[in-house]
Length: 548
Image (tube, rainbow, N blue to C red; front, side, top):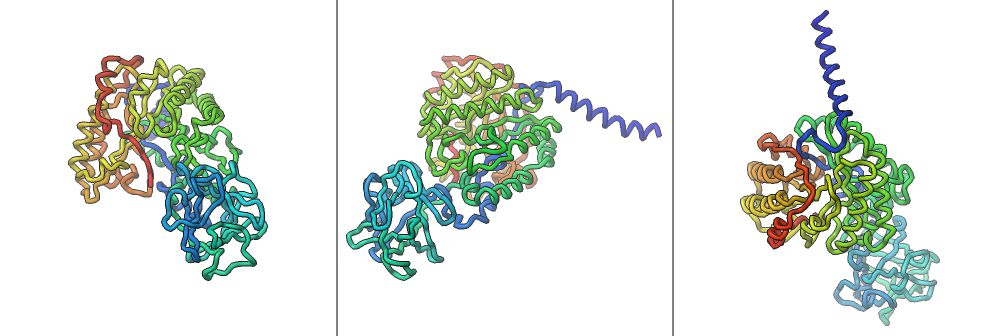
């Protein structure tokens, strides 16, 4: 009886002791360890490429918000065109499609109202509009309403009819105009009201597209099922058993207005984030909350919840203020939670759409907001994607303590990597990535975090051993980052992006790399190190993630 009592009591005492220690440690540390993390991507911020089946039930699923389309008259064999990108009446006179015929400008495209109602944005940003039956269609509306909403009837051969709310159908004329005056109801034979619709691109599959595509009730059901089952408590056990001490959790700006965010976004993600913190605490894992999707979109991609590919975040003080409110909400809610390690103020702002001065101002204000709630929580600032130098953030003097610069390393998404062999990719890791990390580590400024990387490349014939060597090279180099690293992502429909698959199938071997040193205390940048490194190759700074 005594032996059985000991066998039962000892584990309970140890468990209680672990929970006690977890409560004692503040959210600013990993007990001296560097971050060895995994991203929980595609969970609270939807990315269709991670789990395509989420979109399977949407009617007309190839006509989601942001889809690029062209229309060609079957009689005239001419394309509908917004001359000069918009600002005047449409014509039906182009033999070959050009950017004018695709209703977009910097990826501004189709807006979906329902499965049969759509609004179209021209190359110059204006919306197609038609006042009434008998009038011509022009690209002159600044914002859409009833007159800018068109009904699209579609057959199995991708032929379409387009009509107004009044029921009047658009037709091409022999004078190459587009007018809402077709008599009666057109058939699917060759007639002036029938057009071939060409889907040029259907690249955006984010929260906006999912929620607006399904409608609120169906979307709520789909997202509730997804959020409750994509990541579970068992996944944190898996991570703990494989030496992962941190999860980076992407969230969308609408989480701050949970449970009733503005349409079309669906509430419920906040309760799931609370669960993640509870599971993390149970298994001695820390959390980085990452504002992945900002209002107005900071990069035009689906993972920023963009509606149509526009990058409007920095163009409106309201969007930036709203983002700061989200940071305030997250910091106030989680700053004292023992599982919190850091808050990332913004994921992957675009160098092409977000000016550096606007970004630095936002980062500085976000840093102060977090400091209002915690003196020790790490504040993480992400490098701009595109042609941007990470040292621009070192130079900015955003904060004085526990600040981290997040770099994203992918040997993908650029022609530079297309023809590289397995050996070339590995050499690039050691020569370029390692050189950059060494320089940044020596700079007495923010810590360095490889917040996203993946064991995938453009090598189409890579063997398991090739992947193992590539993964080993990345782990060896990224382990030297002063703050640590996080793999993108835990689960993914594409197997080499799936951390769990890589571990279980022995394509990524964590145990063969050595975890080194503690997170250093870093405050100021060395100007000598800055200028010595500033002239390095542009490929050294490449970190863009652009899916599909």
